[in-house]
Length: 250
Image 1: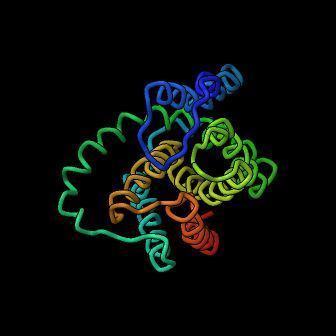
Image 2: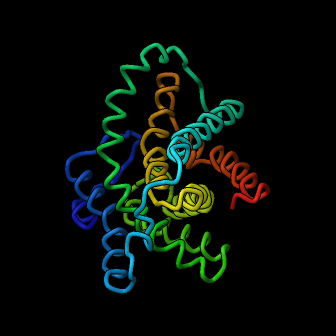
């Protein structure tokens, strides 16, 4: 992220568009966790693919859940934001759903190698090894490292433009503490890191764009108030994680 930092870039609005330098830096950074995992593990384990979860999921349903669960949680969070007066729906856009989803689906598929670059590091390498010291250590450690890894982007406005760095770090740590167990559940039930990759891509692309797609025009969509990374998202993710724990799925 150094070229972007040195250029003086700062994100001041919630616009999802990115310039060329932003795209290059962000995508390069997203590959770093996977490269780190491969460098550390190469030659140290007899089966690198199994050690990092580089296998196909057990069931097709494991991949279906990676889309249904994040999008379902996103819509539920928008309903909570609407009830709180922080969001206004405009369902008239649903008539143009086909034209909206087609290019977005292509963009989603093309971005998967870069989300693979992240989750091979987090769910493939880091989480299983931190789990050796206890499940709670695994979840908390992975979530905090995952959040603080975003520090360069947070300094530049990143996920919470318009908010202080301290508030942005705290909010992202909370978001990661809640989303890591969900990604972990998908990874563990499938014995593959691929579902975590697919779910991460949905959370970071499809889910965020769904917020804009369903919103009434002219809204000021505060990232602290709307979306999975905001307090309504924390509520629905906390309830879902609680259900996963209660039903012994994690």
